[in-house]
Length: 308
Image 1 (cartoon, rainbow, N blue to C red):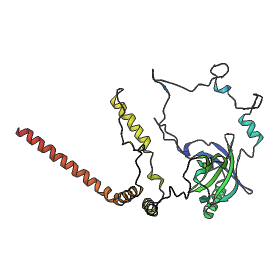
Image 2 (tube, rainbow, N blue to C red):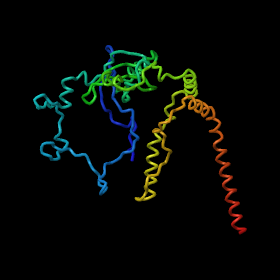
Image 3 (cartoon, rainbow, N blue to C red):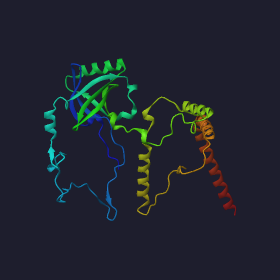
Image 4 (cartoon, one colour):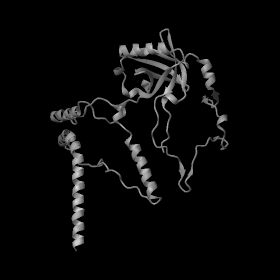
């Protein structure tokens, strides 16, 4: 099952250092801004249902070793290793491992979603509240985010410093060379006449997009799939060991080789979106009508049985 995670305010700091821009330093502590909600599957031996754990094995001797005896090493060309501890790295690079160094400020709209990785909260350390608020308010007024770099877990990260309500958040970004080029993929070329949409199809698609466009509200989106998996688990528990998995939703027709009439699909989509509000309002009434009809039908059947 999914493990409950502590809120960001209750977690221990992952990293401590300072935001640096110009000659200004803001001492801060880094806290995770996310919590996992996924189903926590354990590995099991299907014959006995015993848990299968992760073992630390010495690849030469085949023996299991204690985690206290494990160190991090970097392999050299002659198969020798250089062992570096976290403390040695911090001692060698005290500034780089303790500083979120802002290199430039830019508009948030100029940073593509493709680069976004993981968000963190930055909390001011003791006596740093005033300069923390100054930086947060100044960035908010200017409408910019800060592009910075910092070291976490012995890895340098590119990051975006973002004013977000009462908080300054730090979102790690992918480096440009970490994104693969799409050049080797079989993608339809832009402007290719063979796949270019008809003007009427493009107009209907734009109209459909306009009907479906709304303000972004993250609270409207929930992880329904995880909830569905939990419901499936509960159903199997109630049914016992002999339960078989039955489809709980209709499978999509993704293997069809039929030619798709795109114009017809767009018209149907536009029609369904227009009727969406009416159908939602009418749903309770239809449900009540069906319930009443079912009661009447059951009543008539009971009367016939009694008469017989």
